[in-house]
Length: 191
Image (cartoon, rainbow, N blue to C red; front, side, top):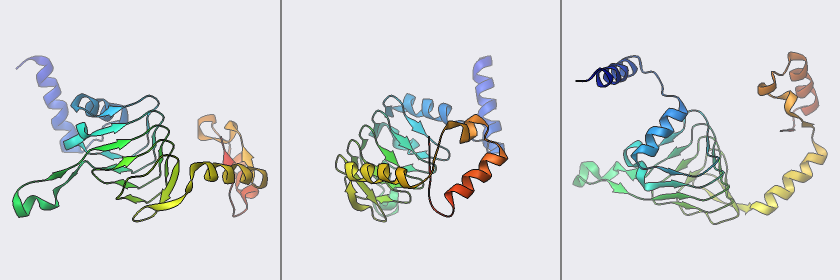
């Protein structure tokens, strides 16, 4: 066994024993090596699960965001105990797609371009281009253009905050209080 092989083996044992979580870029790199296909500007937030055992059945387009705790599954093992086979299905996520927190994408699903999936959704059927779906099971809410138009109009009514109000810019406690006072039990928008 070479020194590098031994070191990598020991690292994997240490991670397993102490249950150290792999950083997202490392995780994605491993999945891509296994066959996951991802486009440009892919943003996967914390605690997402992309089916590691069948990731080569998953294609993710350009400008896709997975909010925290999204699950993308390409297999269904519910049949394994009954006849020793697992159902598999391709998952194709188009371009310019947002998938909300804690959503689950089941095997065999196509999500079209410019789609928005609301938080907590369970996607059991294909999602057409330019649509907003939400719920369990996910159902049609409106088209993306209507959704964006409504949100833009809200920006005239609700407070809007620029980058200095973000964690990235090290927002101060005073600014956090200001934000909460201006939002006043409603909504606001931040860059």
